Length: 199
Image 1 (cartoon, rainbow, N blue to C red):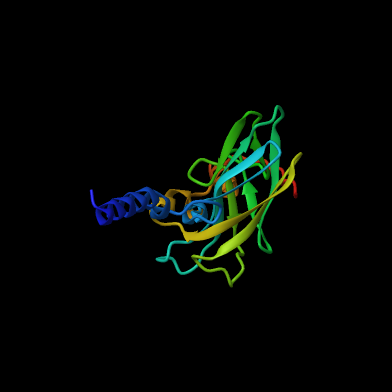
Image 2 (image 1 turned 30 degrees about the horizontal axis):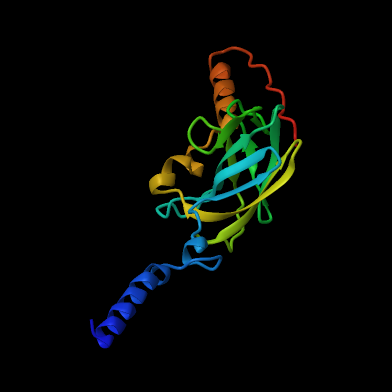
């Protein structure tokens, strides 16, 4: 084999051996390490919050309350309660499935916030500057773990999120007043419902 052919073969072999190294990025600054999930989450101690999102009314509605949807996991051996959820400067109104003003996260279990028949966190006064596509800091305050902060996206309650939005959150006060008016119209003397405790 001639000297020029040997040089050509060596150059070709060297190029082929380097090709895999240059085909994709490697190391800490690789593009693949910059991929971010579509949903927000955080973990503090035994509490983990996943799929957190602030849901605004569908664009077909001019106004209306917003809400927070999330799955909250408790990996501890004791139940905890979510005592408050704050979105920016706005405080959410909490309601569990039974109308309570805190949301219980069972030990070694989870709770879904948002959606028909689930616990709810409604925001009647979301800051006016909040827009769909923005991100908002959301703070979940739990009875034992304390504050867990998540930066969540703001999305309209349409498509995948339609069944988790503010229009389907439980409304215990409405059902209570409806049952009271029903019993009153039936001619019975309706007993007063005890006022809910203020948090």
